[in-house]
Image (cartoon, rainbow, N blue to C red; front, side):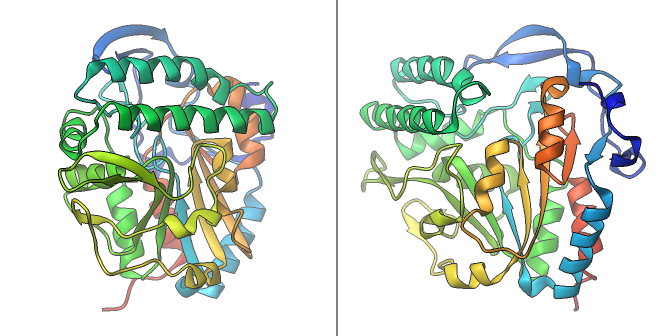
Length: 346
């Protein structure tokens, strides 16, 4: 379905303040973990018809939600965000950005190949709209379980994680730091819900942002290492792309400052659940369920539709309050939260 089929009143163009960069219609992608470049041809989401656009399904409803959140104030507000392709870019310097799972290079390349085989089999299933959700959920559990097993069997070390992140094609969207800083100044928590790997996400934050934020907590699959830095197990509930929600809050922890060390800050699940106004950020329809465990009063959902726009926009438009297209920066979200709350007091 093309954009012209939508009611023009539901679409707002904000290129004048986002300054989005335009992708060349002929893009190059780093193929797999070998980082070989392969021509992909003309992409739908690289076309000029979609660049610099944001789709708002019901502007009046969004304004009503903004008014309610503003009236309640920052003490009732929290942000729940996906990580891969939401906080991070889909494209990095013309290459397909890597996820926190995909960037990982084990010392034994045989296990990288085995995980690639699993990806090639299960990834199409993840996005197949013809497969019922209950059946797909079981298959996602199967995929994640097998992948975690290979990481342990292959002898993954924390040194490998550090090296993998250092060599990875991964970058945060422009505006992520500004968003985190704005929220930190107002003591607004950010819960990063990810089906990836918490230890890798934390390492990405350290290496790419060169700082941590006291208000940012990770809810993801967490590894357990022995005294020699060897992976021995995973802790807590398995989180995959279809079961991310606030029932996993018991897995949340502050960012690691050092291997095996977590600071004394422990996320207060009861306090978080009292923050009943939510800004939800995601790139997958399943991300809309991240707030399922929270009895929220008002939620503004923001979706990042990075590719396959022609086939997916109608679904995203109906699911999310606001949809950013073409791997957009986070600047629109920064503008949104700045409209919700006044400048922080000195």
